[in-house]
Image (cartoon, rainbow, N blue to C red; front, top):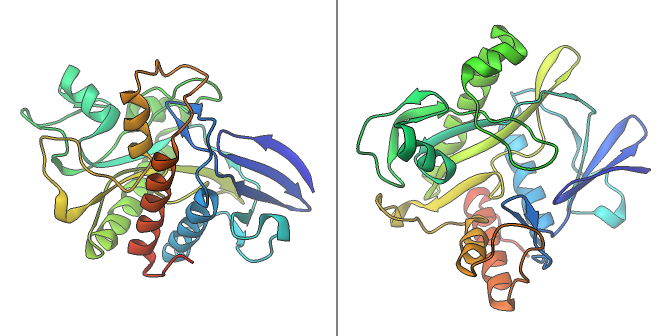
Length: 274
């Protein structure tokens, strides 16, 4: 087994013909890894993503095994196929929040898609939209339009990425709604395997998506969340300039964040976290 890549929150190992994608307890906000880990985060997100991969079993994906895992990584790793990754972050938005809200407030559109005037933070969009970004190896991902994806990948691939992204989001959001959760938006990644566009990375986790309690949804304000937006908001409130190094996370924020990840897992899967 050979360590081949260290990401902000995950590590990648080569193990025979497959790869091990190992989630850590590190937390990254504004592309900066904070110095304080969140206990169980890696395992919670891995198990939630694995549950969603099974939910989307009809969508080609990179999972080889969720059980054939070395003991040292048990519970927080998945064995996957090596893919040739497509260099586009595929984002679906069903609600207006985050960077999409900021872009809308500046331009009245998101990723070149014009939206109705007068929308507020947290408003549900008329229909989900595909708002891709670049896939930066360093620094921040930048918004791009569908036409940019066409120029980079060709029209057939661009259309397939949009179709898959919106389909996964719509199905996942509909299921989550039955569980009392709004998935406001999500980020997906795809790669090529045996000539087929294949779902990769993680799926609909509370790191890659905005999770809101449906009963408390109220447009026009910041929504209570089950995701790392809680840590992001805390970090911003400290006055941190969003440049390395990030601030240490106090114990109460660590525990509250862990509880939010656990709540998201339990609401979606229906399984108690032990």
